[in-house]
Image (cartoon, helix red, strand yellow):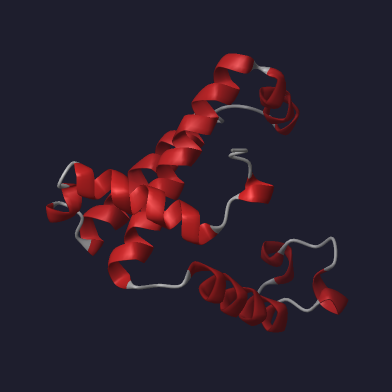
Length: 123
């Protein structure tokens, strides 16, 4: 079995996370608030990897094996908690992302924002 993005669905990932949680009976701890807090904490740990780095330094992290591995682990934590939250809240990830991108397309039309940061456009 090839466990790569091109061969794994979001449904597969949600099931893998759900089974992991259920086998440990952790669902009793997985309230929406606790999961949202965990996402925030893990996101901060991901951000910490880049703390005090210049833009140029950040691009080099991809080739720093130790930092890259830490980044992979923190990103995995963010995604696992996000999938857990979607599981308990009954949120369809694909539908949610498509809906949000549609809103963003309307809010940030290509004609006005191509190559321009929203913060530079006073949105």
